[in-house]
Length: 152
Image (cartoon, rainbow, N blue to C red):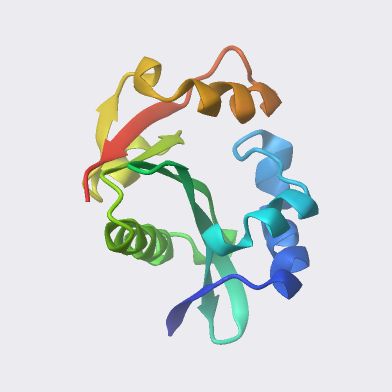
Protein backbone atom coordinates (compact mmCIF):
# COMPACT_ATOMS: atom_id res chain seq x y z
CA UNK A 1 0.00 0.00 0.00
CA UNK A 2 1.36 3.41 -1.01
CA UNK A 3 1.26 6.24 1.51
CA UNK A 4 2.18 9.88 1.01
CA UNK A 5 3.87 11.93 3.72
CA UNK A 6 5.60 15.27 4.02
CA UNK A 7 9.40 14.96 4.02
CA UNK A 8 11.56 15.17 7.13
CA UNK A 9 15.13 16.36 7.36
CA UNK A 10 16.44 12.91 8.29
CA UNK A 11 15.17 11.60 4.91
CA UNK A 12 17.39 13.81 2.74
CA UNK A 13 20.07 11.13 2.31
CA UNK A 14 17.48 8.59 1.09
CA UNK A 15 16.01 11.19 -1.25
CA UNK A 16 19.44 11.93 -2.74
CA UNK A 17 20.12 8.23 -3.24
CA UNK A 18 16.80 7.73 -5.04
CA UNK A 19 17.34 10.62 -7.47
CA UNK A 20 21.08 10.11 -8.17
CA UNK A 21 20.77 8.33 -11.56
CA UNK A 22 18.21 10.83 -12.87
CA UNK A 23 20.54 13.69 -11.96
CA UNK A 24 23.47 12.00 -13.69
CA UNK A 25 21.40 11.57 -16.86
CA UNK A 26 20.29 15.22 -16.78
CA UNK A 27 16.58 14.41 -16.35
CA UNK A 28 16.37 16.12 -12.94
CA UNK A 29 18.35 19.10 -11.71
CA UNK A 30 20.77 18.48 -8.86
CA UNK A 31 19.83 19.94 -5.48
CA UNK A 32 22.30 20.14 -2.61
CA UNK A 33 21.42 18.75 0.81
CA UNK A 34 21.26 22.34 2.05
CA UNK A 35 18.85 23.34 -0.73
CA UNK A 36 16.60 20.37 0.03
CA UNK A 37 16.75 21.17 3.75
CA UNK A 38 15.80 24.79 3.11
CA UNK A 39 12.82 23.65 1.04
CA UNK A 40 11.96 20.47 3.00
CA UNK A 41 8.36 21.58 3.56
CA UNK A 42 7.74 21.56 -0.20
CA UNK A 43 8.51 17.84 -0.59
CA UNK A 44 5.99 15.01 -0.43
CA UNK A 45 7.32 11.45 -0.27
CA UNK A 46 5.73 8.19 -1.40
CA UNK A 47 6.30 5.05 0.65
CA UNK A 48 5.55 1.40 -0.03
CA UNK A 49 5.36 0.20 3.55
CA UNK A 50 8.52 1.82 4.98
CA UNK A 51 10.46 2.00 1.71
CA UNK A 52 10.86 5.37 -0.03
CA UNK A 53 9.71 4.80 -3.62
CA UNK A 54 9.26 8.34 -4.89
CA UNK A 55 8.90 12.01 -4.17
CA UNK A 56 8.15 15.39 -5.65
CA UNK A 57 7.99 19.01 -4.54
CA UNK A 58 5.48 21.83 -4.77
CA UNK A 59 7.71 24.89 -5.09
CA UNK A 60 5.92 28.20 -4.60
CA UNK A 61 7.14 31.00 -6.87
CA UNK A 62 4.52 33.66 -6.12
CA UNK A 63 1.19 33.96 -4.26
CA UNK A 64 -0.68 32.56 -7.27
CA UNK A 65 2.00 30.39 -8.91
CA UNK A 66 3.69 27.13 -7.91
CA UNK A 67 5.67 24.42 -9.66
CA UNK A 68 5.62 20.65 -9.49
CA UNK A 69 9.29 19.71 -9.65
CA UNK A 70 11.78 16.98 -8.84
CA UNK A 71 9.29 14.16 -9.52
CA UNK A 72 11.13 10.87 -9.11
CA UNK A 73 9.84 7.32 -8.83
CA UNK A 74 12.02 4.28 -8.11
CA UNK A 75 12.58 2.42 -11.41
CA UNK A 76 11.04 -0.83 -10.18
CA UNK A 77 7.90 1.03 -9.05
CA UNK A 78 7.16 3.00 -12.21
CA UNK A 79 3.82 2.42 -13.89
CA UNK A 80 2.05 1.70 -10.60
CA UNK A 81 0.34 5.09 -10.25
CA UNK A 82 2.75 6.44 -7.64
CA UNK A 83 3.75 9.45 -9.71
CA UNK A 84 0.11 10.32 -10.39
CA UNK A 85 -0.62 9.97 -6.70
CA UNK A 86 2.23 12.31 -5.80
CA UNK A 87 1.13 14.96 -8.28
CA UNK A 88 -2.47 14.72 -7.05
CA UNK A 89 -1.23 15.24 -3.47
CA UNK A 90 0.69 18.34 -4.57
CA UNK A 91 -2.33 19.69 -6.47
CA UNK A 92 -4.50 19.24 -3.36
CA UNK A 93 -1.88 21.15 -1.40
CA UNK A 94 -1.85 23.93 -4.01
CA UNK A 95 -5.63 24.17 -3.87
CA UNK A 96 -5.60 24.36 -0.07
CA UNK A 97 -3.08 27.22 -0.34
CA UNK A 98 -5.37 28.92 -2.89
CA UNK A 99 -2.69 28.86 -5.57
CA UNK A 100 -4.28 29.64 -8.94
CA UNK A 101 -1.70 28.09 -11.30
CA UNK A 102 0.69 25.14 -11.02
CA UNK A 103 3.24 24.57 -13.77
CA UNK A 104 5.86 21.99 -14.55
CA UNK A 105 8.77 21.60 -16.93
CA UNK A 106 9.01 18.00 -18.09
CA UNK A 107 9.94 15.46 -20.72
CA UNK A 108 6.79 13.49 -19.80
CA UNK A 109 4.11 15.59 -21.52
CA UNK A 110 1.40 12.93 -21.74
CA UNK A 111 1.81 11.95 -18.07
CA UNK A 112 0.98 15.49 -16.97
CA UNK A 113 -1.73 15.97 -19.61
CA UNK A 114 -3.48 12.88 -18.21
CA UNK A 115 -3.58 14.73 -14.87
CA UNK A 116 -5.21 17.83 -16.38
CA UNK A 117 -2.16 19.93 -17.25
CA UNK A 118 -2.13 21.89 -20.53
CA UNK A 119 0.93 22.74 -22.62
CA UNK A 120 2.04 26.38 -22.61
CA UNK A 121 4.94 28.32 -24.09
CA UNK A 122 8.04 28.41 -21.90
CA UNK A 123 8.12 32.16 -22.45
CA UNK A 124 5.09 32.39 -20.13
CA UNK A 125 7.13 31.04 -17.20
CA UNK A 126 8.50 33.49 -14.66
CA UNK A 127 11.99 34.78 -15.42
CA UNK A 128 13.23 33.84 -11.94
CA UNK A 129 12.51 30.18 -12.80
CA UNK A 130 14.74 30.27 -15.86
CA UNK A 131 17.64 32.03 -14.18
CA UNK A 132 17.42 30.41 -10.75
CA UNK A 133 17.00 26.78 -11.83
CA UNK A 134 17.46 26.29 -15.55
CA UNK A 135 20.92 27.82 -15.63
CA UNK A 136 22.05 24.89 -13.40
CA UNK A 137 20.98 22.36 -16.02
CA UNK A 138 23.57 20.66 -18.19
CA UNK A 139 21.22 21.14 -21.18
CA UNK A 140 20.96 24.93 -20.73
CA UNK A 141 20.37 26.94 -22.89
CA UNK A 142 19.11 24.27 -25.32
CA UNK A 143 16.11 22.91 -23.44
CA UNK A 144 13.83 20.17 -24.73
CA UNK A 145 11.55 20.19 -21.72
CA UNK A 146 7.89 21.04 -22.22
CA UNK A 147 6.08 23.57 -20.07
CA UNK A 148 2.61 22.64 -18.84
CA UNK A 149 0.17 24.36 -16.50
CA UNK A 150 -2.72 23.31 -14.28
CA UNK A 151 -5.48 25.45 -12.79
CA UNK A 152 -6.59 23.95 -9.43
